[in-house]
Figure 1 (cartoon, rainbow over the protein chains, first blue to last red):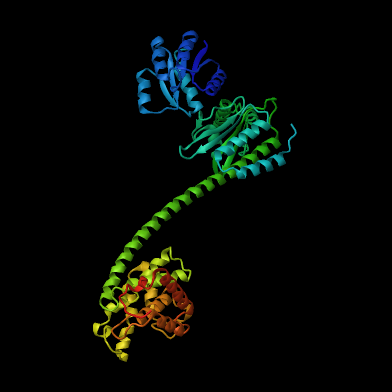
Figure 2: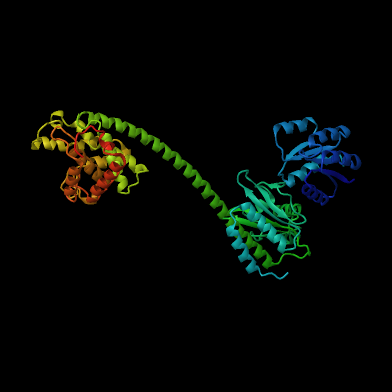
Length: 122
Length: 413
């Protein structure tokens, strides 16, 4: 079965980079640049894992996280953000985030974590 | 692609020397490689001391790594490949080619030893970064960072002369980087020292002002013992200062305070001279005169504990020296007598001539000038005498004689 990943970040460069990175690892990858786009793409695409930025225009990552988890409680969401405050971390966890990774990140760690979240799903 | 590597390196090196900002230097390097080589990406990873990690400083090309997105810790396979000693595999340490790794792994595939696994981990790290060549940047034995190059667009491997070009470029870059860092640290240190210096300077100034106030009141006390000179010590000081200015001494800085203190305190040792000698209305006999002379030693002794007043003490101690070397206490001669003491000597003599003292009546200023000139070269420094006369004449023209006597001394001018 195909591993599906949705990358959500308002920086196009990051989306492109992660898309290429995970495609090399036999993922099917879609990208979105805002919270609203992320919700739309998630409905159509049905990802197993979502990499979700927090600071984005239109709708930020925390609001999107709430809706994404409401609509599909089984989806794994990894917050990938430059924002690292105790408050944001706790808020993310309360809303059901499955991990919280701060930028700059270790690609090896990110890959392992995504693979970890996929266990039992794919 | 035909390239004159030598010339390019020279040009780049010249440019690097002029760049003082490390971030610009790195961006220039990636831009340069990206423009001149057809690579999928050109990236620079650099050690971030403040956060103790390696991070991407810049990246260019189709497969570039977004800035600020990826970091390496010290345990990252590529970092440990270049910063730790490797005994298990014979591969160059000053560059790493993906093709070399693959060859090594192919050769040793059957062994499946720890070293093979290590090579595979490094290969995987290169795959993650889409890296085909990595050039480490060392400073001494520290790994400053790495130049990470993607595959060539034409699909060919890197040639030896290209690798050696990149190595030279990286070396130049590290040197320039260290220079820039050193330059910046010097600037930082300098401004830190400057502000500390300013602080010390202002503390000193405040401290000295306070000392100076104490001295002024001490001097008033001393001269209060001698009813004839009481109140005139301020005039002695003023006369001395204008003489110093006329001589071209720096009267805006620290020396003004030194000279002022010397002028105020020159007779401070008289505090230890018995009143009957000090105020004797007749000539002193030789014994009394010898006691009187000790006031310079006593003055120096009083100032001894004040380490900041070494120069003042010298003035006090030397104000009875004579230009021709026949003075006391040391018999100093000419310019070996501190200039402050030479000024005090002239001003004090002038003051004695024009003031009414217990042993003499005040005489006119003109007489005093004549007397000073007569003794110039024997008792006084001729330059100081002329400077004194010029300065005082100027001041009197400007302000009248009241400038220094406040009309207390009756004399014909």
